[in-house]
Image (tube, rainbow, N blue to C red; front, side, top):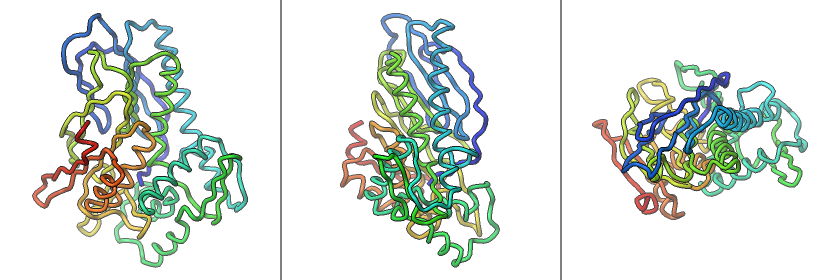
Length: 355
């Protein structure tokens, strides 16, 4: 899973970009190509911090008054604040923080959107045979990623076994009708870092569309949803990054319209322990960071939260099981496998190649 430290205070900037610009954001690149639009358009760009990462929101329009900019800013901030207040594991007093701290094994009322995201997470867990599991929190902490610690030695086998006793979707009951959840182990610790950013993207995108802003792109920490067209009247061009540790470089561009894209990988949040890469992505099935050479997975799906979760699940499954599952289920997925010489092998499913 993908943990994140305590969320930074939100800081927002807004400005207008001319059509034809190049924007770089988190783990993606936006590329505008082609001829000019039939009439001049503006691209309003909002950027700031949320969920301990950077967000970028781009909205296309014929022109934006100060009032319209303020309205769009309000829409974005309201949705981002809502998701963080409900789903942050690191924000004191959030709904998820209170649930994790509670030692009750009875049903506890939760917002409907939290129950819905937990059900979505469970569906991805079932699909992946348990390779994806948001109850992985105890293992995330054990390997030092909660507080960004770098371990000097691996955790003892007994510590890994003890943490695994508190991990598993079988320890969580979800009642969407309540809505409510029940922890069957009092120390169950839910980590939604691998799906909350995608959900935030979906929430902001839906709110913008409801407000009449049809052409837009929302990016939170590299999870993105593109709706409508870019300023040139074409699908948004989003670049897939090469999974490089110290620099950012585009591997290829994908055209997106009414589609989301999410990437999971081992090249941003990791440390070296006894000469081996310790990735922030933990396999809940054995309690250890993934270590199989799969550098990144990019998934396309209409729902960003699902793309987010699927990218993590396929990363955990690795370079053999991951592509096999993706092809069997018809998922649009791109796998980049690290070779010994530092280059990458590209493996894409037929559904991804059609994009």
